[in-house]
Amino acid sequence: MAQEEFNRGPAKWNGQIFGSLQEAYEQLRAIVDSSYDGMYITDGNAVTLWVNRAYKDITGLQAEEVVGRSMWDLEREGIISKSGTLLALAQQAPVTLEQVFRTGRHALISSTPVFNDQGEITLVVTNVRDMTELRELQEKYRQTAALSERYQSEAEYARKQVLASADLIVADPRMLTLLEQVKRVAALDATVLLLGETGVGKEKIAKYIYKNSARKEERFLAINCGAISPTLMESELFGYERGAFTGASREGKMGLFEVADKGTVFLDEIGELPLDMQVRLLRVLQEQTIQRVGGTRDISINVRVVAATNRDLEEMVQQKTFRQDLFYRLNVVPIRIPPLRERQADIPAFLDHFLAQFNQKYNTRKEFAGDAVRAMLAYEWPGNVRELKNVVERAVILSSGQLIRPEDLPFCPGWTPALFCPEQEGTVDLKALTEQFEARFINAAYEKYGSVRKAAASLSMDPATFLRKRKKYGEPPVVQK
Image 1: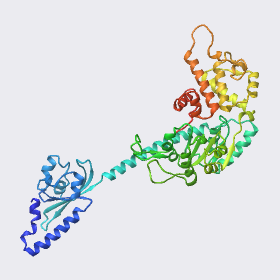
Image 2 (image 1 turned 90 degrees about the vertical axis):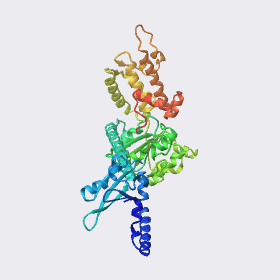
Image 3 (image 1 turned 135 degrees about the vertical axis):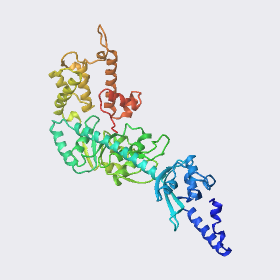
Image 4 (image 1 turned 30 degrees about the horizontal axis):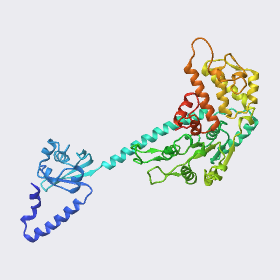
């Protein structure tokens, strides 16, 4: 029965009845055509009688391609991948299956046979529900779950590494008193601001706070605000939605604050944070919410912030390079870490620790002469613990004998660049000497400026190269992601 015959069905009745049936039919057709689901109707011999508008939109098939044609032919020709109608006729019962159409849309097909009084199938009504958006949502959820699992796995690894490395070397009474105060603060879950010169161990103290807090089972992320490019900082800290900008990942990206949810975020070099990012950080501290780049919805987070700087934030507030309201939010519990020259009792302990570390690394058995130790106790250490560590490593590498003497120390009289240009016969490892020279200047620049960008600029080097070389020469990465 073709569609024309189906439409002429009521014609065998008299005019008045035909009119009322035609009107009812038109109303029914309008209702079915308004359905979000596709409708496909065949007779009991699997010949297509009618399709609604939604079916055509979902499948991309036009009425003239299917109406009046047998489902057997349509399936054989590949116009329809698998017919629910034929299965319903064969099983004499409703069936449900999935289909993929040439439009690329996925649909759930439900074919239901209609029986007459004699038990014969007169019609098969197929409902076609578009499942494409649901499948896309499921895939997006799967990708998000996988991404979240990967972030959590990486964060868990980083957490274990932090716990393993959060040990502190403390012998000076002043530092012991400070650590007692820090341990009390750690349990209170308040925002902490660590103040002190570059190299005094602010990140070590931040890890100690984390290790002794209620959040120690969660994540710890250290972020160096001076090491992230200003153009990338917003997306790194707060993440972005899919398609937020050219080159954005297809599924979007979680920001570091989202990754650290329920954990601790250490913001080193907070004084390097641009003003526009200071506004975003203030919102994190005040409302514990973030908004991804390109997003419109607020995302709730629960993080503890520990910030650190070697700069005078109060002076920066006066110069209007640092927001006053953010300063007050960060300055809830300020902790000043004294420089190494003010805690001399720590120096011998650090010397023993670093000497053992580098003897093992370079397979040596070197020791410090007494006058070399006295020279280091008398030195001012402008680069603090970081400088001391570098001096010990250089002394282990460059000292000619087993005993490290004052002349092996870079700040003592008698130290000259000639150490890097030895006059000797035989083979010289120029590559190793060049790397030692480069490492010295890279570390010295960071000790002097305390900022990746400034130190890199002083050596005419871009920040990314500066960070890579510091890591290569044994310094820990400035930013952890």
